[in-house]
Length: 408
Image 1 (cartoon, rainbow, N blue to C red):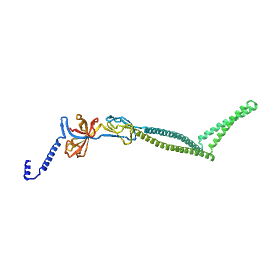
Image 2 (cartoon, one colour; image 1 turned 120 degrees about the vertical axis):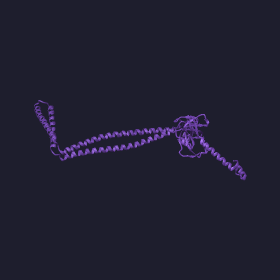
Image 3 (cartoon, helix red, strand yellow; image 1 turned 135 degrees about the vertical axis):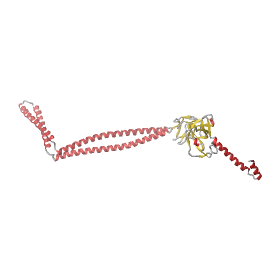
Image 4 (cartoon, one colour; image 1 turned 90 degrees about the vertical axis):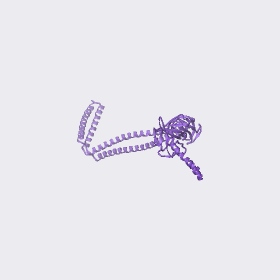
């Protein structure tokens, strides 16, 4: 070095400052390169660690009102620890409660209406089935009678009618003889007029039965007359028309009722949606903690009017606090998701907060200007996220922290 200065001096050229600056830069580069190779990896009795610095991510939670109203209750104070689901504030709910109760009434009415219509539908189906069966039975009977008239009687039926005629004739002969004997006795004064009238009445009945049997015998023995055939046919057609009418009428009534049920179902569905919407709006009056949190800041007071979107409180989530750190390209190969990590904060250097590597960015980047790593002058680094298991609020957003990641 002295030779260089003597040479420059002997030449009379003033170039001392540029040379000194160049040599200083070379020295700094060599020093930092050595530091980069040694300071990030720490070997200890309990394992090998990568040391790094980082910053706590902002895992704060902002709670805003979803509705417009007056703050009726505030159940927390700044600094309070709150469990997930705890009600931290309440907005006046009188109007929304009335809407919800009315929606319940409307839903109940729609349910009853639908139940009644469905019951009517069930009853109508049974009634239509009974009427259809009766009219069908009448039609089939008339049809069988018509076919019987047009086809004539069978031998068995003729024999039965002939036997009936013989029996009726025997009964008539007996009644006729009895009437004649009783008439003689009446004339002789041996029987009363009432007794004769009674016997005569039996004679008339026997005569009528005998004539009916003869008439039936004439029918089964002869081809049906046009009048008889027409009467049987008309009876059959009327029965058929009645059967078809019962089917048509029943189907029409059912179709009308089904249409009413569809409308009732739509009304019930709408009532259900209205109830759910009013219930959801009512639940918005209860401001609940979304997780286990610490209360950082309250922005409202009891009795204050708030509009939808108004910031009510800022909370800090105690669980799953995340720290963002950066590891050099040289050492990133040692880092794996799930590795244990220790986090240290300046405000409480005596405590160690446990965590784990939760994410490793796949893309390298230049060292952020706001990050002072232990590997200064590293051109490219990888972002590594550490999830702190439970700091109970000690590790707060924005804090600079030191990290040790156990890699072996």
